Image (tube, rainbow, N blue to C red):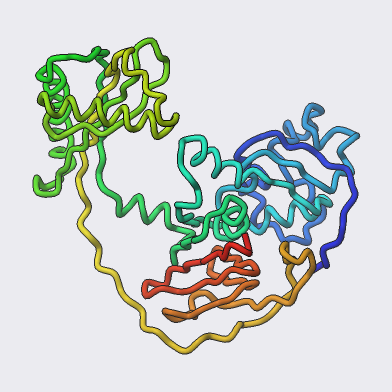
Length: 363
């Protein structure tokens, strides 16, 4: 591994969001050995080339950026499957640094801009690359705990296979309060009948069916609306509760006293999520064991001290329940790597998931 050093070089802007590893290096080149002559040509091949012709409009094909050693990317660069060949292609093309500061910004957009404090949340990091980056951007936004599932690389597929069956039904019928509760109840009742029919077709037993109601409302003459839960039966009391919940949510988002009660409330969209609840799956609990020594050590960059440090590398599947790993450290699993930074501590629970705790001083 080459030591990290200050780099002054041309930076090429890649102004495309969500550039995944399939775009960095197409799948058909994955079997090519890293030593293949011309490996650099595989980098962004389908973006840079039109057949055998270089596309002149692509930044990396332009004379000013052909010597670029830095990529300045948009959000979520390098997403998708974990592919070391993407790194090899970048390296072969002379790229030494990828600047991507968007991850923490995405967390802020999903929390602060919706009225939530990210410090009150836990980050769930999965996939091939998620556990690599989570420790950095979690500390940046003030999150104090990260959970990495044991089967992180297949977590999405596992969730799809084990998740509830869900049918989402919607109906639009603007109504300005006060309104006859029977009209609103009839809207929900029809959607629930349709939802039951779909759950029946999906062979979901009646005992495992559930219907979740919601409404999107706004103050009259406003453009945007807010979603709140609706009661299982809408009568006069239920309708009053829907209106009160809307006002509470409005003031939670926009501040106390922001509600425009004199404007009147308009119900716009109604929805029912008809759910077939998946039965709970039996899980195995792993026994505690002696602390496991690192498999090896290697030099890695420590952002807290801004220098290369000798870092222990642990074999993730070999860590027993209740094992503790103090950062800086690396925990390697098949398909992904968990980074634990200085000032952070990782522990393994009885189902082999990794919990990373970030102390305030390390954030």
